[in-house]
Length: 472
Image 1 (tube, rainbow, N blue to C red):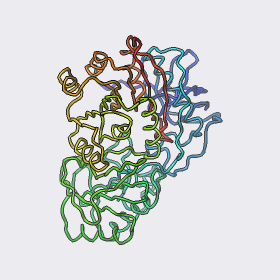
Image 2: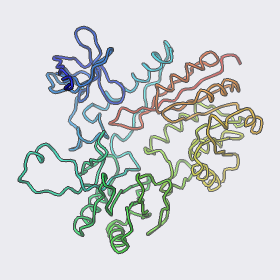
Image 3: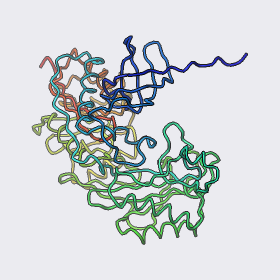
Image 4: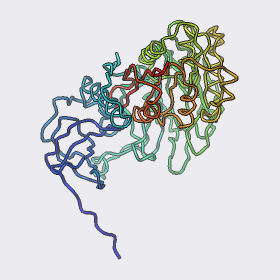
């Protein structure tokens, strides 16, 4: 029996009403059914080719813009629409901020059940572009081809690429000619790496067959304009490796840390690799107020450092420390927030699941002369128990900055059991934040809410919430 043919659904004159999750926009059909629409912005009127039909919604792609939204702008990047990194480049930045604010408000209302909340206007980023301090590129011998290239069977072109993976197609890599996320010489470094490799006939990585010489290129920077470059090679070819790295060293004096790794594994993760120093230092230094942080190739550090400073100032302000408090910093990472608030606390206890992050936190605290921070490594849901509280004391204030999945229910239960007078919840996902806050509403009230835009041109938004104990 043959496979049943799927009937195409084509919707006409759909008004895009608002922004939705993960960069899609939302419209309604005449009968009131929700339509999730790709390649459209709020205010557009579009025709939609539906590729997914569910009982409660339809999902599709805008095929024609019948009326352009007043919020629509010309994208800055030539790769917009193919590269999945900056899906809101076609949306005016003021509108981006409004839709991010609306997302936070909607999640707190719809998921958390919080009504009549006064939300402080979102803090926009001073830099709409060139704000990232880290980008990772992939070498590939199977460049993503445009439809024109596929159709032109007579053309001759290289398949080598150095760029980003196509969303949803890991084996295909878009060759990046320009990227507006990191300051120069980031683009120049990437273009020179590709130029030299092609000129010398070096093998670009074959993602399907897992073979080749050049594998990945990571570029990190600090606010001083210094750069770290880490190149992953699939196999050792000593003469080619030395020449390749030496060329980058000679061309770019801004590279103060030049590193490499030989990676024959099935994935690109560097966390279990032995990183080798080729030239310069094995780290960059970053500064925030009077604090200095050592950033190695495996270190986590906020990718928008200028806006991270604003985020941390808000967090410190919400904590409202007088100098006598015991503070717990849950999901502390490399201890950046813990050290940032330490001057105004009696003691800060940080907890994080990754040992390398804890090692970095301890090293940075020692470097900064901070003696009132203690860091522990362990899975939050396991380590954060009665014995831990007994050993470290009952906190007056808890700061929590969990990953996108939010806090484990055991962690929420323990916070409620401890019942500190204040909780500052920093989140990169207001949906899971709202879920957790709903579990806490019997004991805590929301006093302040401050969205922060860490990633312009994307749908992502951070949110900081101050909770105060209801019964003091």
